[in-house]
Image (cartoon, rainbow, N blue to C red; front, side):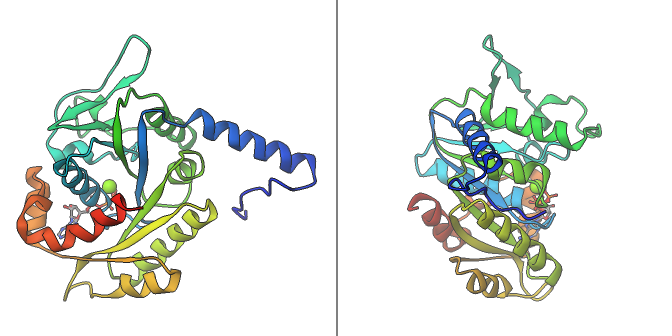
Length: 267
Ligand SMILES: Nc1ncnc2c1ncn2[C@@H]1O[C@H](COP(=O)(O)OP(=O)(O)OP(=O)(O)O)[C@@H](O)[C@H]1O
Ligand SMILES: [Mg+2]
């Protein structure tokens, strides 16, 4: 299947109806109180999407912005684990999800609905997509400057739905330097292009002598997307993530964080 937005000027009735339905869906999912929705994505799993999302959220909050995170990884939600959150999500009288406020950042995640964090979440594709859309559109987000969406890997189901209808204002890509990760990231960049979403930049993660370096730079040139720098493969990062700590507040990461924050806040 070719993923092209339907031409609104298309002559045939089917194209026109599909276009109108898509626009209606987008309107239904527009968030009145959220200024910018930023997706963090890569087609490849395990490259650091969640690590980057949670760390950027607190870096933005530290600069005085109102920040929220939507953990769009419905069946393997990692945001609560990365932050050591044990509180639960609940629903208000208007049947809207109320985000958990963790140190000033609002969080919505499927992981906040389970008492047993190791319980497998058994959910099929269409339901997964429904949950992600509900989390985005049916949450009482309140005033938010930046809603960061931690997207799951891949280019179908949830990432496809949220990028197509979620009114995403910009995407940050993250990849490790290995060939397979670069190839899957390439696919996710092309998915973003399909829906004409502004590309804020690419970050190389786990850069260094083990996996290689400067490969995301090549990818950024290939697509004409800003290269935002690299984050080393580091034991300190592993330990911070395992403890639920935010490592971007460490001054050693200042030069890594600055260009990424600039890409988000100056778009
Ligand atoms: N620069 C780094 N150095 C060392 N470990 C890292 C680094 N970045 C991330 N990690 C670790 O790598 C693992 C994968 O990171 P993370 O969960 O953020 O990836 P992901 O892309 O969100 O994965 P998934 O596709 O499963 O959602 C985690 O255990 C994380 O702590
Ligand atoms: Mg993740």
